[in-house]
Structure formats: structure tokens, C-alpha cells
Length: 244
Image 1 (cartoon, helix red, strand yellow):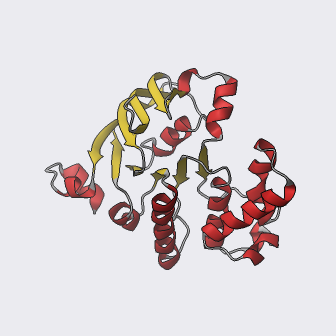
Image 2 (cartoon, helix red, strand yellow; image 1 turned 90 degrees about the vertical axis):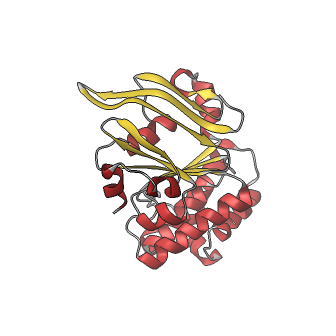
């Protein structure tokens, strides 16, 4: 695995029963990149993300995340790896019975020995980092707008100061103004924290303005890997249609 890469996938094969989702998918993600997983419905974008975060096993090939082969990790190594990344699921997946502060604090309570006052202070700092006022801390998810829920879930994903951030359709369900504000937030966090970001998205504005590089999945393969500028130069009509 190259020193500057945080993720390397080589020849990934994924099957559900007799149905093949990926057949020889390869790509790499460099440290500090905002990298996109794109493709049509059923192309295996979210499946690939789930494989990276140990929610699903690959059936062939190798997937290295932060230098570890995730297909062959011990239970202890898997636990250690999970502490080094944060995940924002598509609909936030906040615990509805907990306050926002409790949601953001939960990983710190579980995986650190910090005193309660420091956990609370750190959680409030994470909420501030994603642009939420301190009064949100005592509220419940049901009391927040869609955009605020996404930001709260992002604060929770950042709780353990991860090296990697995984985002599944981060702007889906948001109005255009909230979506663009969320895009700007992701870029700011990458620049200030130095984290690497991997996201599944179909948002054209996000693809054009936020992603440094991306892959487009199709027909069980990687049809394209590169930048938007490179994609605009392609002569492949299928890829051109994907843009429009």
C-alpha cells in the first residue's frame, strides 16, 4: 500500500447469492482527499462503502484501509480501526431517545476514559465545529430540522477525532441552500482537520464543486476514475450521459 494512500482496493468481488455486484473493482484514495463513489442505482456504491467500514465482507480481492487488510483483521484490530473513522449514515441514524449531546458523547463514553465534564465540553465543541448552537445540545432529534440532524450526526461522527470520514448521501433530503452549506462545511472540516473524506453521492453540485476525485461504477466495474475536468474530456457517451 502506497504511503500517501488511506484506502486501496484491488480486484474487489462482491456477490449476493448468485448476483454479482462488483467484479474486479480497483481504486485508491489519497490522504486528505474528498473522494466520491458514484454510479447508477444498484451499481454497488453503498455496498462498497459498507465493505470499507467492516459492515460487509468482500468475496474476493483486497481492501486496505489505513494500512490494514479489512478482509483479514482480528476482532481487536477491527475495534481499533473503527475508532479511527467516523460514519455519517444517509438519514443521520441518531438515537431518537437521546439528546443531541448524549448522541455526540456516546462514542467518547464507550471508548475513552475521559471524565464526564471533559466529554461534555468536547461534545459541545464538536457541535460548534459543525455550526450548531449550544442550545441544540439539550434537544432531541425529533426537534431538529433535516439539515440540523445531518450536522448533529456529523458532530457524532467526528467525536473521536477520526482520520477518515465516510458519508452516505450527505445532502439527500436537504433543500438546495442547506445542501450547499453542508458541502462547504465538509470542505472546511477537511482543510482544518486534515481528514480524508469518502462519500457516496448523486448530488451534481457536490460532484462538481466538492469532490477532488471520484470513481463511477457500472456493469460491476469501475468505468471511470479521476477528476471532473478529466471526465469532461471523455469520448465515452455513457459517461457523458452520467454527467447530464
